[in-house]
Length: 195
Ligand SMILES: Nc1ncnc2c1ncn2[C@@H]1O[C@H](COP(=O)(O)OP(=O)(O)O)[C@@H](O)[C@H]1O
Ligand SMILES: [Mg+2]
Image 1 (cartoon, rainbow, N blue to C red):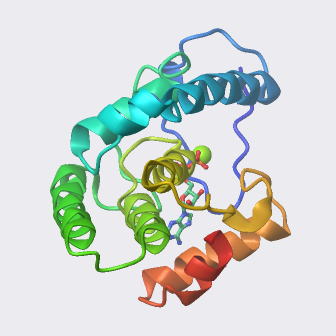
Image 2: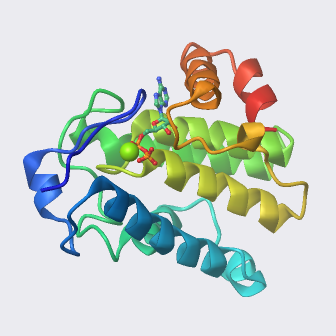
Image 3: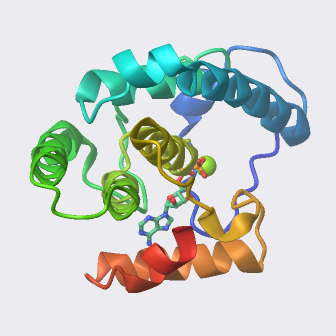
């Protein structure tokens, strides 16, 4: 049985969610490796010119499809909304409603050029993790989503602090504090961190 250890700012899985693991894996390292491989393939698909042109959009179907492509070979709940409450995020039954509101806001920002596209993508990322659509993978999913929107616009890629945010180190602590400032309405630290 995998030892599920959680780092700060992560949401534990329920027993039911854990049972939806597709491959039989013995260790946390194996699970990380499977997820990483699945995500590499999703990123390759996402960053293709044809995907950026035809599939990437601030829409529910794109967001669910992206999560499915990132985690679908590892978890049966990939691409499906969360069905349990977590220590972060909306009550699970409100997830689709809050997402609808976010998509309306973000499409309005995009149509009216309310923000530079890189800032808009970072804000969308924050609102997505704040809602927490999925049982797990919300951070990686919403950052990749922001990367795709920035790539689609053909502007400079986001830095996300220049390191690996999945490790429980100083960089992740700075990232989580910047998210917490954004939770209270101050986006400056997050825009600075992720730009
Ligand atoms: N206070 C917070 N406010 C908003 N988002 C947060 C907060 N704390 C953590 N997060 C986000 O939640 C993510 C963790 O959720 P999780 O579903 O476990 O994603 P992943 O498995 O990709 O790390 C973090 O990477 C971060 O993006
Ligand atoms: Mg996680």
